[in-house]
Length: 465
Image 1: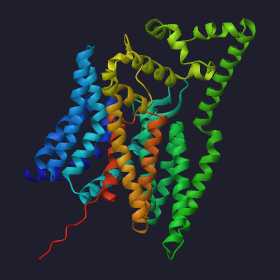
Image 2 (image 1 turned 60 degrees about the horizontal axis):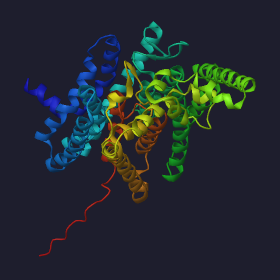
Image 3 (image 1 turned 135 degrees about the horizontal axis):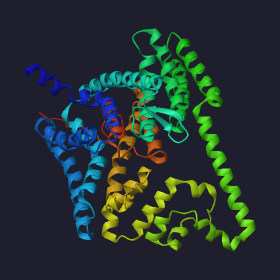
Image 4 (image 1 turned 120 degrees about the vertical axis):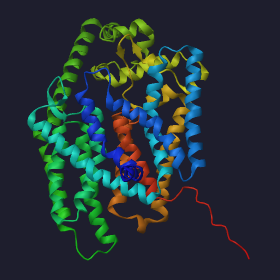
């Protein structure tokens, strides 16, 4: 029993990461249940891991400071929500913990283990997570037991995962590491695994997965060739470069037979029909009545809550079928209208997430930047952006000051991965606010921490005799 607890203590990060694909499947199995074991397990991690780290942290003072910053801001947000009148403290605090999950885990493991140990556990975990995700994905596909990516049109495949957009982020976060492990495997033939793993990204059908596949293959193809010349290696990586080139060309060529083409075709047809309808009504009714006719297609619940004039003002100069069909835009407008109604104090610490509901209908924002800005105000957005920018600066400093030492495939895929996650934050959303996808941000930030020097490194004191 003592050895068992010692193993857990020494491999806590590895265990938590390796459990992630299983937790996602468990959440899918419990999708109709009022209680999600996976969800509450992740919430408990957000609360209990800092308490555990407090006892075992090597740099306890720095850890306490980082947790105090998060705790003080959370307290200010909650107190302000009490000031203006809470609708549901439980829903809002739960959402706050979900948003804090990635950052809390990041700082906990930064101070719980040293860099070498964090790196070992992350690499081992990834070698468990990647085959787990791939094997369960293909099993669900062949059994036809799981979710389509686009449910109504039954196009693409997500498998045993509840949210297609979140699963596409997970796929995006994993692919650069897939390339690394396939290329750097102990056996040369391990590169062959890149073929079925790449095809999974085409089958998924999302734009994020498809572009990740093409972008990562292209970047890694260029890197392995550049590495050969820069490091003056003896053997040119013929097999690796050739397979990547074939996969890249094949992925682009296969677009005409992929689920992505079907979705793009449906979207284009829907937009064309909408444009034709609006243009026909413009000719029939006249330009002065177009606004009134456009308003008939807007969300009636939003009109009742905010008024037609305020709602329409956000579409000024952009009254077309594309903007009307843009659900992401509608939710941003909803958040902007709520934001307009808040006072200056609320604008500093954000408004309650529950305000994004009308009855049982949620208008929760799909894009992360607006969500963090609206829900947590100027201060919360600045704190979160500060963390992300800090790690970008560490990467840039490492690149500028230690280029030759840092020029290897593993560091390169970390760099690509961070870029992909930031793009996901901007265009896909649900990265910073969903623990099952946010954990991959934790992984990347931890890896950057492990592979770079501090941004402000103290000079060693010279001891005089």
